[in-house]
Image 1 (cartoon, rainbow, N blue to C red):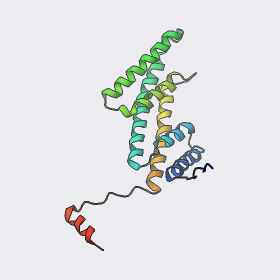
Image 2 (cartoon, helix red, strand yellow):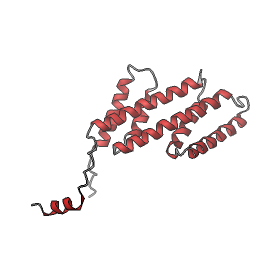
Image 3 (tube, rainbow, N blue to C red):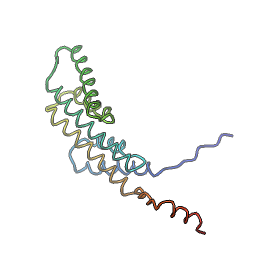
Image 4 (cartoon, rainbow, N blue to C red):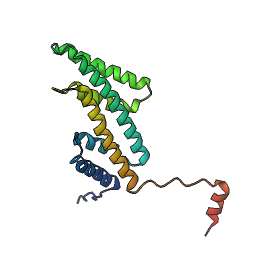
Length: 176
């Protein structure tokens, strides 16, 4: 007889759901796109605070770089009446964005930079690409800040134990 897997809701699961709940509630009062904030919170919620901060930094840097590239590219309106040339231009933009991220040592920001770039250049009927890019940065930053705050507040990581040297370790081993 097959045994059903044990159902277990872990702390990361709870903190992720709480982060998304906070974003959903916050965006009842804050203008913007709640989906980007929720996605950012989902991605930023990691097992440790350090991993959340690193993921958040990469996401913000990537969003800023991708937003700048996307808004600049979209503003140029390259080959808008020549679809095939536009397709190749967008692809070249991705190549340049990846190159720039590598050159500045931000490999962890590449995927988010490309996602943001593509969201902007493939968007239809945007009034102002620069405002749209700024909104993506703000929405992502809000989601990241919520996830990091939840990760820090609920069962925050324990500080590393101090190293007292070999003598303390030996004394600890002999203690009853």
